Length: 464
Image 1: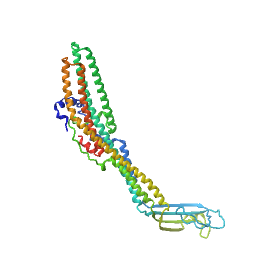
Image 2: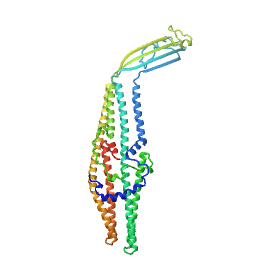
Image 3: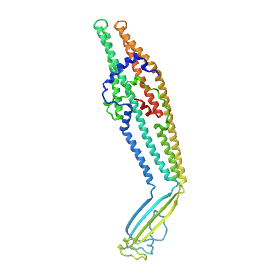
Image 4: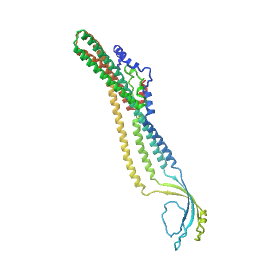
């Protein structure tokens, strides 16, 4: 790989001019790329939101586990009512004590007191794997929440890195713009001196002043872009824009580009893929849960109850106080099996819905894989293009520098016109900015490839 340092003369000129632009912030706190990404992960509220949702999903798993505990209900009922009944059957709506008696020829309006205490417990003794399926389903959402948090962090790291390289590139362009202003200022001073002495026409002074003004405008625009990038980075990291001085690659950005990194696709650890895989897994767990939800249940039930009444066994109404105490005690225990005969139809319907949702999720995962493959391929193509250009640009910059110096001397000697001199200055400025732009594009392409292949952290750690 041809680097800029191969052509020492060109480097000496460019770096000596670029370095002073950064000496102002030399004593201030500086941040490297890794520290900026860590600051963003600790600051952005969206990550705190995702973290809270992850904690909620873990709490749901605990809630599901606790739902397997037996249902134990205790109740106490003290009432005042009449007691008139009639022979016949009814369907039970819940577990209730016996209410026999009160069957007679006539209604009696005399009230009686009654007291009933009930303890009832119920436990799913066997549900054919339903509990396990519910836990796996809940844990699936925990995995999805964790993956969502990791994906959000990954995207945030990529955003910070992208802004970081654009900020670096803009800082170097600002230095190049400053050089351009200084060149046109020198040209203006030379022409003004020559015009005063009568060697050059006064119109050259006006034209050179216009070029100087245009160079200052470009410098101001770059300075504005730099401030905007700092504001964006401040928004993501919580660091005040005025304190955002970057430390990574201060001059190595141009001089010592890192070697090309071989980023093998790591789909198993790529958060941009893992999120979609975890979401697909949810539907697999849902399928198991649906199948188990419609299986029979074997229930263990037990209960005991106590009753008191002011009506005696021979239909003799005693004082109301008689019914306030407990007079009879009973208990019951049993095992029951329950199954809805229409469960097969319900299960079939829900499995059909889940099957289509699973297919949609699988296709979404495949779509994401295709997008990442495309991003990696495009980034690789951009890297090759920038590598080729970086082999040529030092030659262009060196030639432009030599040409500009020659044109300055020729203009002073009256051999060439102002147009020739300004053209040489423009070519030199364009050569500098082309090189800075290409180096910046090279880093961004490396970043894009790393992000697409799941190697973003490895790439960030190489930027020192």
